[in-house]
Image (cartoon, rainbow, N blue to C red; front, side, top):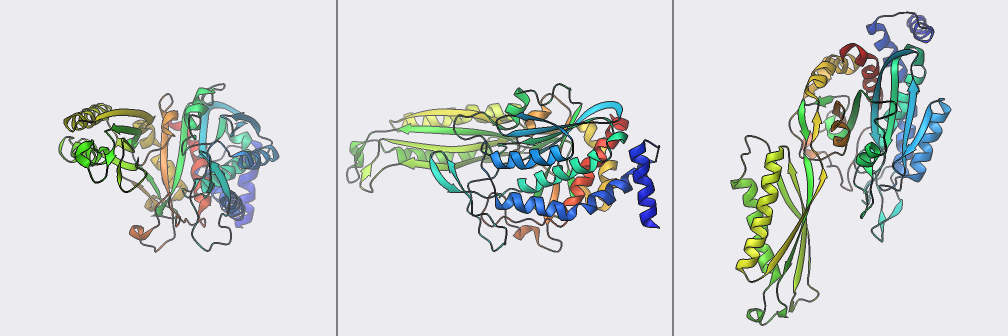
Length: 431
């Protein structure tokens, strides 16, 4: 009986017979779950053969071949990006669904039969490559959504853009890339996109669950470099020079005062991290120069500007007080990922319909950054977190993203497909 009902519903969708939203959601659910073996196959293939930012050549071809098999119109953007365009059988808005494709220079450390042994080139060095952030799962879920929606084409009111984006982790060196380049090259135009949706699988959220947050969700990420110049001397005679290492130690300590003593953290979080220091060649030589680099995470534009100002003031002031000089460079890397408040509230029933009310919840600020933010600068956008932690595991013990031990479950990727597909069908009625 269930098979007969399912067949009737599918025929209704394909022939344009009017059916209820509840029945359509049921069709989406069954078709998405039927794709699970494919989703796992796609995700594990991509995991085994990862590629770095702006180098996703084989990944691009893998996605392109899939979209062409489905009869979906394709475009190539942003060096290695792919855009699929599916025109529905009825007039309506253009909805964009986005997945990122790139991997990281990380050595995978587990016993998975499909673990990566790939190598790549990053800034002139050979490095191991791993999908240590779940982008392989993102691509698989969007490939699944493309397959389900292409089979329901006649029932779609409007057009769907499937955005397979490279270089979310940041283009190497001075190269352009990622969402910023996709937008620059017109991914949100011709036809003009009315709304953009994206998801990120998380190793600490239980599989099948979806987290959302209206307004500022993920932090702006700015990168800073401080070059401290002193005066070289023998390690046995520090008084004959100016030690940039000692000066930099003072600067690093003072930078933490910006967060702990100078920002109103009841308004929004601030994180400031020095992640890299280079200086010296021998243990008995006080070097002339030191370079440190780090990241700033903020959610408020005024606070962001104030933090930048204070970094300049602290670094140059401490250096001058010690007889050294400091040069500060700050690069605005990624804006705040801002979820359109009204749209986020409106899609909550859609999320609950797709995965169950008990699996949908609001979350807090996230100090990580996402270049999905660039889509939201000009277009209503919502970014979601989707669970990839096996049920029963302890979130506190989940391996973090961007680490050798990162691991996610791919047993419920079909729920990501359900979310994407239901958003496409529900959006015309909630916009």
